[in-house]
Image 1 (tube, one colour):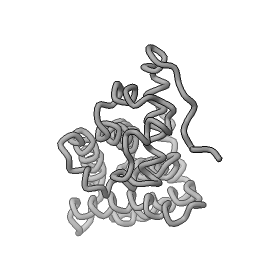
Image 2 (cartoon, rainbow, N blue to C red; image 1 turned 120 degrees about the vertical axis):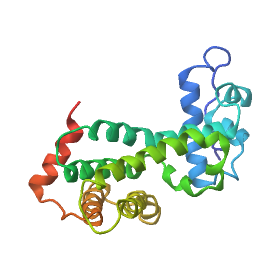
Image 3 (cartoon, rainbow, N blue to C red; image 1 turned 135 degrees about the vertical axis):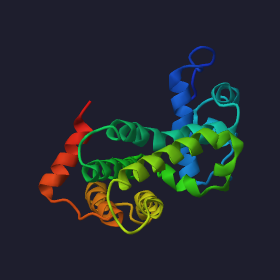
Length: 216
């Protein structure tokens, strides 16, 4: 019976390569998502990656550093989209739809459901400050777009609701392994606009919003 341990890798320069670092991240993502963060040891991660534990520590001095790197993958692509969309002159509703659609798809299509790790108490640790700051910047981008959609409900409240709606895909994904993420992302982005105080777009409006994601 297979032990589940990865293929042994070379030591020295080969073990210090980008491939080794990526192997650690892939192994940790799987174990954190299935076994749990607290229950996963760095030894288990190293074994799953097929590396010596010393090699793991070369790239990630602490388990928290691995968690930080994995969480960055759940927010930085969406933050990059938000930074590109904010200065655009396209209607705020289209930009908000595009950001929500892109963000939901990012969280919903990742190989492992890393967004579920947002509920960990370790998120409050000092070493996760960069992740918290980037996630807060992303939420602020949602609020900046929502502020351009007039509504009686305060923008801060709408931003809280929208952000929670977007990130809820991690819970849905956990309970529905065969989730049609493309359809869910479209419906989710429609719902974001309704929460923000604007009607959901028609097909032409969605096409306009999707085109924003294709721009360089």
